[in-house]
Image (cartoon, rainbow, N blue to C red; front, side, top):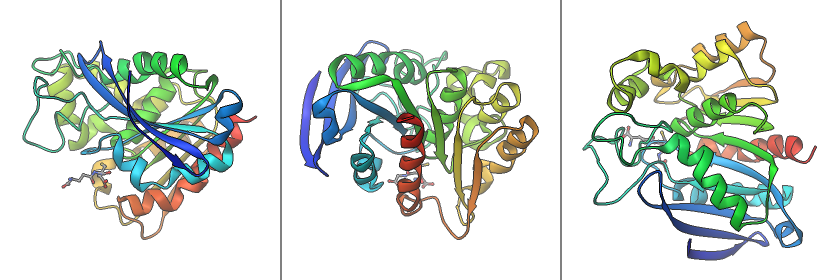
Amino acid sequence: MKTVSESRAFGGVQGVYSHPSALCDCDMTFGLFLPEQAEDGPVPLLWYLSGLTCTHQNAMDKSGAQRWAAEAGIGIVFPDTSPRGAGVADDAAFDLGQGAGFYVNATEDPWEPHFQMWDYITDELPDVLFSAFPLAEVAQGITGHSMGGHGALTIAMSFPGRFRSVSAFAPICNPTASDWGRKQFSAYLGKDESAWAAYDATLLMRKRGFDGPMLIDQGTADQFLDLLKPEALAEAMAARRQGGSFRMQKGYDHSYFFVSTFMEEHVAFHAAALHA
Ligand SMILES: N[C@@H](CCC(=O)N[C@@H](CS)C(=O)NCC(=O)O)C(=O)O
């Protein structure tokens, strides 16, 4: 693992690190904020999965999360959204290929050799983090924005007991029924739609839900509302009697102005579960 940079932030350290990923078959970069409390021993970890077009950097630079994580005494990891590099397949579109891994394990050419983001986030990166940094594996929460909200919700529901809390900002809620999903799942997973269901938060909610606190925020002025399909997940949550909050935030759009506005509440929400 290589240290790209380490900067003092809110009494803690905002680091950027890169490491060779066997699963993605390329170097992967991630940001990790460690609060001051990490100097005295392992701290809880909040995962923040980013959206389309993002790298590890967008949320790290624009969400304002570090201040709240420092106060709460929790670490936050900001993984990249896809494998990258000259030898990695790409597409001219912003919503497929590099920057658009969709947190799935691709089975189709030309994506399969590198686009293994589900296993990268749930298997390889945890190994790196928990062996190299003072982080408590027993106290993890997960959140994300848009494509990353889809990643957070699907991963949380698929690993019962691993995450104590899950939240999402403007998540892609029902990708198998949206152009933010159908296009990418066709490319990454192939035409057989039965392979897609494991990566759809609404379908997972209908099937099993999440055993723990859940918080979702969605702006009413989001320019991508028709693609995100919050109504599908909200209906599935109600049908399952899933505990938690699904909040429509009046007037907010899809940007990091929305994410940073509600970040304090999301960090506090996770901190309550992680310090319990
Ligand atoms: N570039 C896309 C928009 C992509 C977009 O809004 N991405 C969101 C996540 S889904 C984001 O966080 N963008 C990066 C940023 O705002 O820093 C478009 O032209 O439609």
